Image (cartoon, rainbow, N blue to C red; front, top):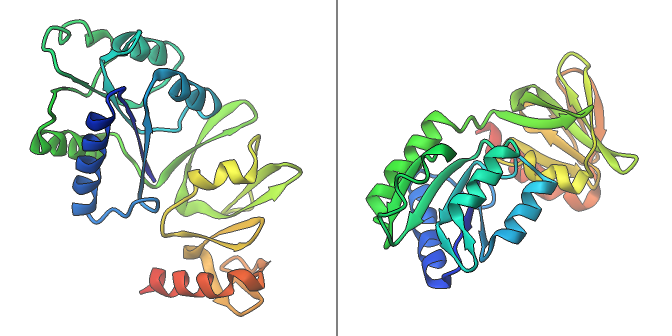
Length: 239
């Protein structure tokens, strides 16, 4: 899932940029909350808190430079110092900052009000160059591991943490709750078959009302409450 954050203390500007962003991604046949998500922040504090919990939470950040009692460039510098590699697009009403932001490696610098075509060009470039939807970063054993989503068989909750089962039998134990892991494994290929199980539909060999069998022979339970949605999403996936 392509995850975007907007940080702007002007509600109207933030709302307009969110609308533009959604229009641009919708035109690419991206579906909100399935293929992309948008999170708006009126100040840096909640954004930083989110990134402290999940350092790889966002692929793209649309960042206002003049924030109340804050400076967007200083915020971006802090993100770079702490290892964040998300793409940053500065948005401001002033041209004067353009040379001050180079050290933070911005993707682009846009003036308010944001021009839709210019923003579309920036987003298309970011999707082309920096977004790899089949690659997912997971924190295991204190290190970030890049995993191809196509190689994931299923994920499950285990002892207040999560386990991700890969092709070949490898299991990655993630120091994150199952509910916290779910947004990372989103999109049309993944569907919950049970309260504590998320399955990769690409590896489903056979589906019944109460169970599903993966292409490696592993049998997983299907809860009654999820039978209808699982079957619907599976049919849509294989078409």
